Length: 335
Length: 245
Image (cartoon, rainbow over all chains, first blue to last red; front, side, top):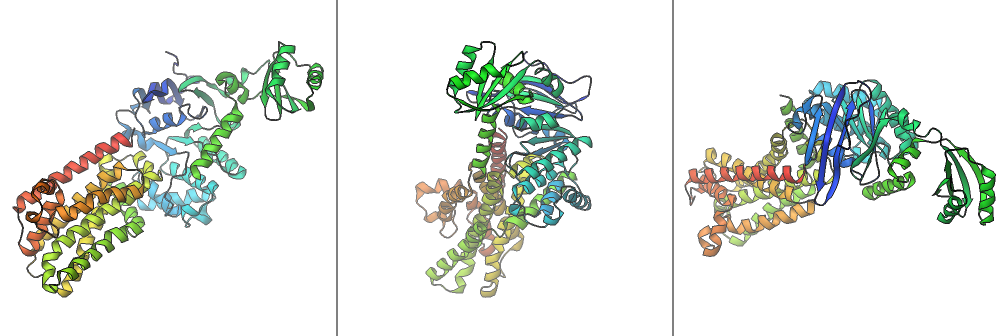
C-alpha cells in the first residue's frame, strides 16, 4: 500500500479514493492512488503535464471509468452509481465548454435545467450569479463573443448553479489575464467560505499555496505526497537559498559551484542560479568563484523557501518548465 | 420529474440552436426537394405522377433531415466538449440520448410533411390513409435518427459525420425502393435492400399513399421497430464504450 488515505485531523471526508488505477493500453495514467477530501476544504492536486491529474478528475466526475479501485462520495459508491451522486458535483473543466451560440444567461439557465431546476428558480439563480460574477452587462451576449476571463467566470458560474457540495476546478486561471485570475481566486475563496468543498488542479504553485488547505503532488500517476500547506512548508525550515543573477547562465556554473563547495546544492534557472544549503550561504566566495569563471554577477539575494521548492524537492520537476509546457499546451489547444 | 426538466430543455435548446444550421438546410431540406424536382421533370408524366413519387420523396426527406440534425447536435457538441456537460448531468444515458435524438426525430417528421404540403396544391391526396401514414413517417424518422446517432457516435468531426452519413444515405436511395421497385434491383443486391430499415418504412408509406405496398404492413412495422431498438442500443453501447472511457 503506497498511499494510505490521508486526511487532516478528524474531519468528515466527502470523497474517499482508494487504490484507484487507470490504464490506457500500455500506459498507467493513474497508479493505485488513495486520498480523502474533507468536507469544506480546498484540496489542491498538483503535478506536471501527463501526471494523471485530468484522468483523476475525469474518473471522479464520471467521464471516465477506473480499471480498479473504489470511490465513495458522500458515503455512496460512486463507481457503481455515478448518476446518484452527480447532483452533488460541479465541474469546471480546463476548457470553457459552454454553448457559444447561447447567451450567458441562457447558458446558465440551460445548465441549471440539467439538474432539474424549475424555470423561475433557474432564472433567479442565473441573474444572481451573473451579478455576483460581474457579468450582468454581458448577460444577453453570446458566450462565443466573451473574453477568455469572462468565459472562465461564466464556466465557474455554470458549475455551481445547482449548489454542488463539491466543485472540481481544472486549471481555472490558466491562460487568462492577471485581473481576471485574481477575481477568480477570490471567487474560489468565497465559494469555499460559503461551504463548498473544492478540488483544484493548477500548475501555479503559488496559487495552490495561497488557496489550498491540503495539497497532493502527483507524478507519473502516483501520489508523491499529500499534506497540509503548513506541514509541507515546514519541510523548508532550515533551508537557506540564495539566488544569483548571472550572465551567461549555464549548467557548467552549477557544476563548478558544487565541485568547489561540496556542501552546496545548485540549480540553474533562466538568468541565473539558485544555491541552497542547510547552513547560511556565504555570498563572497561564491561571487569570487563566479567572477573567476568569467561570469558577470549582477545580483545576489536571499530567497524565502516556497512551496515551489517543496514541489521541486518531492517531484524533481522544475516548476518553470511545467508552467511553460502547460501554457503552450493551452495556447495550442485554443489556437 | 427532474430528469424530464432536463430532457425538455435539451430538446428545446437543440431545436432552437441547430434546426437552422446550414447542414440541416442544405442536406435536410434543399437536397430532397431538388431530388424530387429532378425526378418529376425527368418522368415527364405531369402532376398525376406525384402520388407515386411522394412516398420516396417523403422517405428521402426524413432520412436526410434526421441524419443531418444528429451529425450537428451530437458530433458538433462532442467536438466542442459541451457534450461533456450532458454526460456530467444526473440523468440516465438512455434519457440523455433520447433527448438528443427527439429533436432530430421531430425535424425528420416535419421534413416529411414539406413535400406533402407542396403536393396538396397540385395533386389529389384524398386516397391517403393518414392513420397509417403518420405513424409510418414517425417510425421512419426514428429509425433514420438512430442510424444518424450510430454514425455520429462513430466519428469525431461534423464533416466526417456528413460524409459517413452519405455512405449509407446515397445507396439507400436506390436500394430501399424509394423511386425504383426492389423487384427491379439486381438479385444479388436485394438481400442488402431487405437489411435496411428504410425499405420497410418506405413500403408502409407507399401503402398509405397508393395502397401499393409490397410486404405486409404488420411485418413492415415490426421490422422497423426492431431496427430502431437495435440501432438505439448499439449506439448507447458505443457512447458508453467510446465516450466514457
